[in-house]
Length: 308
Ligand SMILES: [Zn+2]
Image 1 (cartoon, rainbow, N blue to C red):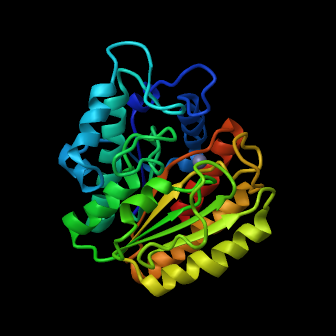
Image 2 (cartoon, helix red, strand yellow):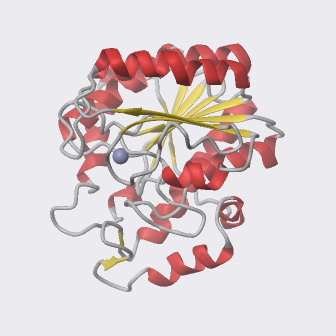
């Protein structure tokens, strides 16, 4: 079984204002890296449209309607200070969710050993009722619920190594012990949440990192907090909120990880997926804003996924 890759040209058509870090070039840079023959064995598929009813697993109808209504006929419209939409943003956001759901279907059906979804907009800042931080719908949250409702998963672990805390995912699962949310992130940094004492129903594990943290302390946090929580939880599926903005080149934060750290963390999570989850692991692109750091990190991450 191969590693599967979902992406779609419409992800290049979700437009943000000039100079915005969350830009279509991010996916072009990833596509260039994954075009290399080292990735020839990837099983490549177009991201399908989601069944829109699944978005309601994580968001109330009024949020979905508010996003739909915000989509302009032309140009770019701001949803908040950081987040905007363009005419194709609806399709992009719905295909991002659709790809994540399809990835869950694939790993439960044994059609892929694991899956990487290269989509935008990202999702982990989207709260139940609030689009924010470049995110419209919380793709990882919908996919976790889809695993539970569509495939009978009892426990899903979401591991978020994006350099920003996934306030949205924490918000959605705050009182739901069937989903474990573990996050490493810089603190202080946007969005301001993610302290150690934010523990939800005992299912939230935050491992904040001080600015200028490098590989050693990141791995220590991962080994000391994230991995033991996963071991104790024994998930049926692991979803990675895979942001690559903790890379040392990234302009939005001051964590100094390298490609090797993403390779290592991927390997650790694959090992856990093998222990309790029948190897089921789905990785969803979140942030990562330096094109070189992003593409080399995604390359390391996907190479490790392909090794299984
Ligand atoms: Zn981020």
